[in-house]
Amino acid sequence: MSGRRFMISSRSIQDNHAWLEGDLFSHMVRVLRLGPGASVTLVDEQGAEHRGSIQQVEKERVMVRIAGSVVPGNGEGETPAITICQALPKGEKTDLILQKGTELGVHDFRLFAGCRSVARVREEQHKGKLERWNRITAEAARQCGRRRIPAVSWFPDAERAAGSCDHELRLLLWEGERRQGLKNALEQLPRPASAIVAIGPEGGFDPREVRCFIGHGFLPVSLGKRVLRTETASLAITAILQYIWGNM
Ligand code: SAH
Figure 1 (cartoon, rainbow, N blue to C red):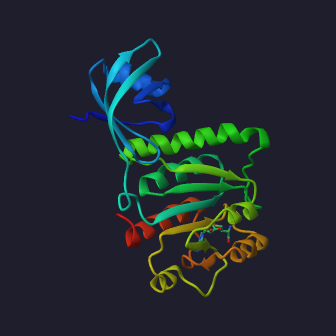
Figure 2 (figure 1 turned 180 degrees about the horizontal axis):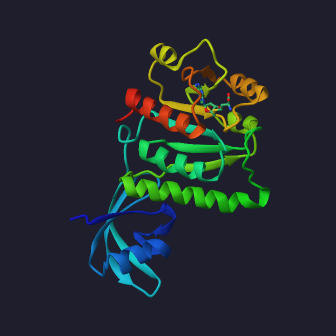
Figure 3 (figure 1 turned 45 degrees about the vertical axis):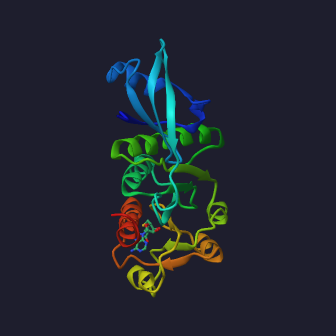
């Protein structure tokens, strides 16, 4: 019996023990009423599974003794890894993109301040926002039974976001692209080990951003004549890539 599965951070494990606090503690002890002896499986952000049982319950934390760990080998991951490089949209759309994208199997998210992004993240807000965004992907991963939690990172502009990429395939969803359709482009490309897709904000990409992404090896493609909302474009491209290359 390996018991219920819980998402944890590998940082909470030390010497075959994991101390769990906060929301996870409440969920395990208060909601599920798990106590000493209960079998559990802890899954960390790398997808490694740690099986063990609860040994000790304290007032605000619980200790799990780990009996064995299984680290995923090649082939167990979600390949190809799809990264969504998303210009920051307005408030709730970011949450939606992170939550639904996680369900659809996005590997990680890179959010950046687009020239035309209406929403702004001030310097002092980064940390708090990132924590919140990472909580959204963690919660979505837990809810949909995904072992790996997609990381969310932040870049102050397109230049730095584009410069952070070393993905084998780089796509730029550009509403101004007239020649290269997505379908045609994908038919000519072999399945990559990793792919990143850049998506503009509600107001679209600024020409300088388009040049910047192209300069970093991004291939501009069109999703057709209809202009999609940024969140629609983000979720549609993920579903399409997962369907043709992934595990849907
Ligand atoms: N305001 C812009 C549209 C922005 S749509 C305009 O009127 O032209 C927001 C983002 O979604 C775009 O920057 C692009 O990344 C993506 N997108 C939406 N529709 C698209 C399409 N038909 N082809 C490629 N990308 C599209």
